[in-house]
Amino acid sequence: MTINITENRYLREVQKDFNDLFPFLKIEFFKRMHGVEKPSPAQRMFSHNLTVGDARTIKTEGELPIDPSLTVSELEQSLWNRFGLSVQVFRKSGNLWLETTMTDKWTLGQQNDHGREISSPVEKAPQPADDYELKRDED
Image (tube, rainbow, N blue to C red):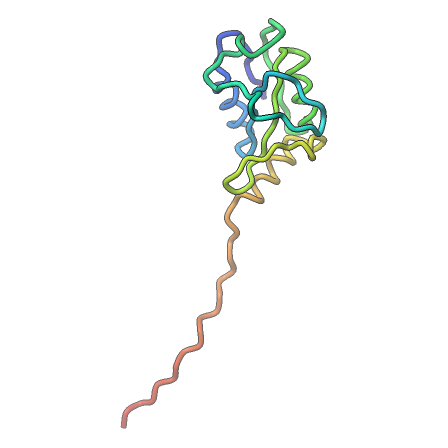
């Protein structure tokens, strides 16, 4: 699996490619790199309508290989080192998106699986019917 990183692609297109691979994860682009297990302030987030060229510090283009065994921190470092893109991975939790700061060492596969588990409706076991009122036969 790869994601194409080119000058004229919109950030939202790169986000969609990533989310197609991992439906319970998303990436957001930021103006500065963050440390491992450190959050990124929302006010530093780039608009999804910018291009890769507007958001990066290194003018390299190419394919970014992505594998479910890659850790969050490895993905984030790879995007920074190869393309000058500062990203943060978020995991779906019900109706919320949470930064994966405390679980940066988890793989993308683990993160996505956990997002699926905590976001999918719980299947309830069939419940026994309520007690019924006994009715007398009218004589």
